[in-house]
Amino acid sequence: MDPYGQEWMNAEHSMGTSIMAVAFDGGVVMGADSRTTTGAYIANRVSDKITPMTDKIYCCRSGSAADTQIISDYVRYYLSMHDIELGEDPDVDTAAKLFRELCYHNKGQLMAGIIVAGWDKHKGGQVFTIPLGGALVQQPFAIGGSGSSYIYGYCDSNFKEGMTKEECMEFVKNALSLAMARDGSSGGVVRLVVIDKDGSERKFFPGNKLPEFWMG
Amino acid sequence: MSILEYNGGCVIAMAGKDCVAIASDHRLGVQLTTVAMDATRIFPMHDKLYLGLTGLMTDITTLDQLFRFRLEMYEMRENRKIKPKTFSNLVSSTLYGKRFGPYFSEPVIAGLDKDNKPFLCSMDLLGCIAEADDFAVAGTCAESLLGTCETFYRPNLEPEDLFETVSQSLLAALDRDCISGWGAVVHIITKDGVTTRELDGRMD
Image 1 (cartoon, rainbow over the protein chains, first blue to last red):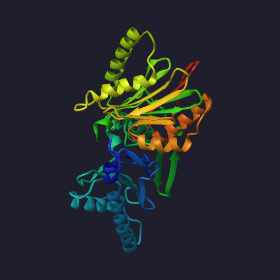
Image 2 (image 1 turned 45 degrees about the vertical axis):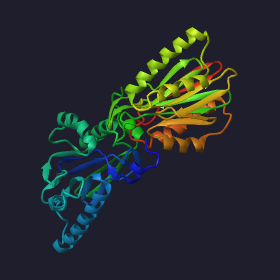
Image 3 (image 1 turned 30 degrees about the vertical axis):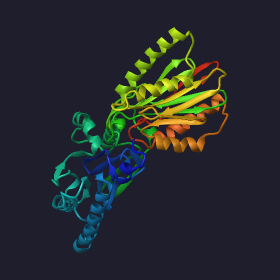
Image 4 (image 1 turned 30 degrees about the horizontal axis):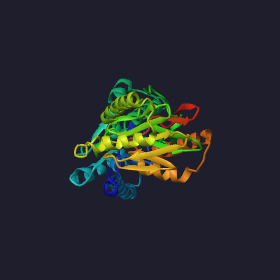
C-alpha cells in the first residue's frame, strides 16, 4: 500500500463508467451510472454523466472527467452560437460532428469516449457514438465506458427494432444494472434522460430500485 | 495498481465490552472485474480467536491453511488453545520469515483471551504488529475504514450495539471503494459463543 498517498493524489479523476443510449421512434433514452473514481477511491458516488448540450441534445461522458467536461463545454458553446445563426434548434448530427472534430484532432491528448443522442425535427431520435480515437458512428443503440464490456452479450440479445419508450427504459435500466454489478469502476445510482419532440425528462433510480439479477 | 489491490477486499475488527467483532466484505475481483461475491476472508482459528486476511486471495488461502496446520501442531504439543497474543506473534514471525519475498496479505486478528478480555491487532505484510484496544482495520479501503471507525467507535459497547457500530463503519467505507463490497459478513465473538450475520449492502 502507499502510505504517503502519492498514487491516489496524482491519479486523475476517471469516469470508469457504464453509459448507453437507445433510439426509439420519436426520441431517445440515455442512461449512465454515477461513479467517479480517483484510482480505487470513489471521489463522487452520485455524479451526473449525462450532460445537456441543448434542451433536446444530450451527451453521455466516459473516460477522463476533466477532458469530457471541457469538450462538452466547448460543444455547448459552439451549438449555442450555431442556434443563434440558424434561428432554430441544431441537429443531433451537427452536435455529434462537433464532438468528433474535437476528439479526433486532439486524440493524442484526450481520453474521452462520448455518446451523443437527442431529437431533431429533420431525422427524429438519433444516437451517435464517438469512441477513443475520434471515429463517429451512428447506431440504433450505443454502449460505452469500462462497464460496457460486460453487457455486449446482453444488449445484442435483448435489443429489438421498434421498441417503445418504456421498453427502451427497461432495456437501459437492466443493462446498466448488470454492468454496475460486475464493473468496479461503475456503480452508484442509475440516471436516465428521455428526449422527445417535447423536450427532455430526467429520471433517477437509486440502488434499491434497480432490477436484481443472480448475485452469486 | 499494486499487488495488494489486485483482488480487493477489506477487514475490520472492533472491541466491545467482553466481546470483539470482526467483519469483512465478500468481493473477489481481478482488478476492476468482479469475479465472485462469496469470498471468505475471515477464518476461525479456535472458538475465541478469528483471523481476517486481506490482500492477494491466493496468499489469503495459503496463509489460512498454513496457520490451521501450525495451530493443530500447537494444540497437539501444548494440549490447550493458543492465546491471541501468542498467535499474533506466530503470524508476525511467519510473515517476517518471508521478508524478501513476502506473502501479499495484511492480517487482522480478533479474539478473547483467558479472562474474556478483548484482543485486537493488525499487521502489515511483513509482520509488523500494531496492537489496538479499540479497532483494527486492513485492506484496500483501510484509510476510509480508519475514518469511519474513529467517528462511530465508543468504548465498552454491548454485543448488539457493537454489531451496529461495526456494520455501519464497514458499509460507509465500502461505499467509497470500487474494489471492495458486494456483500459483507460480521462475526460477534463473546464468551458464550459466536454470532455470524450477513449484511445487506450495495452490490456495486
